[in-house]
Amino acid sequence: MPRLVSLIVAASLAWGPALAAAPYADVRAEWNAPQAPFRIYGSTYYVGTHGLSAVLLADPAGLILIDGDLPESAPQIAAHIRALGFRVEDIRYILNSHAHFDHAGGIAQLQRLSGAQVVASASGAFAMEHGGVDPADPQAGVASSYPAVRDVRTIADGATLALGALRVTAHYTPGHTPGSTSWTWDACEHGRCEHVVYADSLTAVSADGYRFGDPQHPQRAEDFRRAIATVAALPCDILLTPHPSASNLRERLDARTRGQRPDPLIDANACRAYAATALKNFDARLQRERAPAQ
Ligand SMILES: [Zn+2]
Image (cartoon, protein in one colour):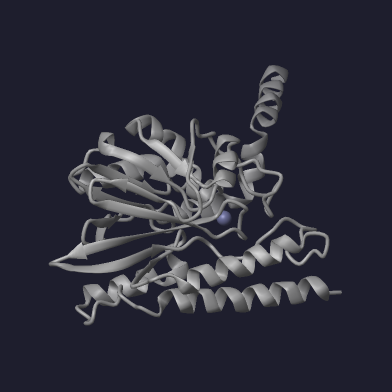
């Protein structure tokens, strides 16, 4: 009996990060619920889970995957890629929106399975290489850690990654995390090309005590506003977001399945609307920071 107790205590200590993750247990299961993969447009596919996006870009020269979702999502993402008829081993690059456990948690395993090169912003690379532990993260100490990713290659703001005919451009959109990055590319179908935007989270979520409007750190609010403006200004026909619910993907997909025309996934105003909502929420957050609830 004492031995069992000491084992449990030892296990609890060893799994400190897992204990910290306990509040997320329900939502993690919900996010990781099964989801059949589907074509978004052209050779761009949704291979994520029910509640977390992962996007596959296919070219005869190889595959690019954006986001790995939770650590426990990796097998599901790999299965989705295979179900679409592709080989996980053909993933050449894995990109990331931001280095939180729900979007980067599965990347280490997907990197192992594929041998792909992981690519991220400089701050994103730092956070992923430290398993999501980044003192500069507004959610530092609250966000769960995850398996660290090795050998992350950094990409500069505005730089383009090429693979075959694919051209994917990185846009730094810091705010939700210091390394937050939005990605853009063109997807073509029957000779018609659409601008796809995988816009990172623009929500101001933090650990207690962190202030986005801290006068000691004016850069925080400046960066956040610039990120929102960047997303608003992107050429944008199809908006995708790390949390599909943030851009109503489910509703748009259901409408498409019902045969709605024009294609409800295509909306040239989607990025501007997403940015406008983000700006409203960010201003409300700053307001609350200035006048905290009694
Ligand atoms: Zn996040």
